[in-house]
Image 1 (cartoon, rainbow, N blue to C red):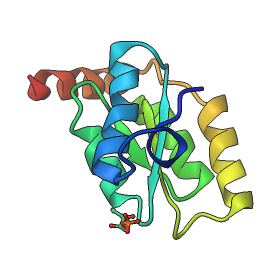
Image 2: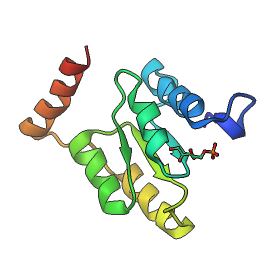
Image 3: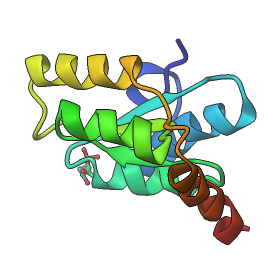
Image 4: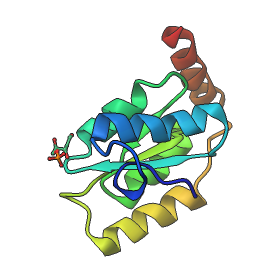
Length: 118
Ligand SMILES: O=C(CO)[C@H](O)[C@H](O)COP(=O)(O)O
């Protein structure tokens, strides 16, 4: 596990630490990243600024499962304000047990994101 921000010797503001975690994913040193801030908004925006990142702000397990399945999300964004410890456990279980859909339409959506990003 690679840590950033307050858990590492680097700038802890959300724009810096969340984009750095996302860069770990696109550089290949991490498979996925989990980012957070008080609302979760800045964390997801910062991660999504990194090309190749599909960050999903997940407030419950169903959203996390959908993010993995339909969005092939590679960054989980969490709101510290909204997420209790038991809820986080549910979200993480759904996130780590999920996987991307092989459905043609779902794949086309993901491919289109790459297309419009460049
Ligand atoms: O939710 C956030 C950004 O989307 C931040 O957590 C919020 O701006 C507060 O920042 P800080 O914790 O550095 O005072």
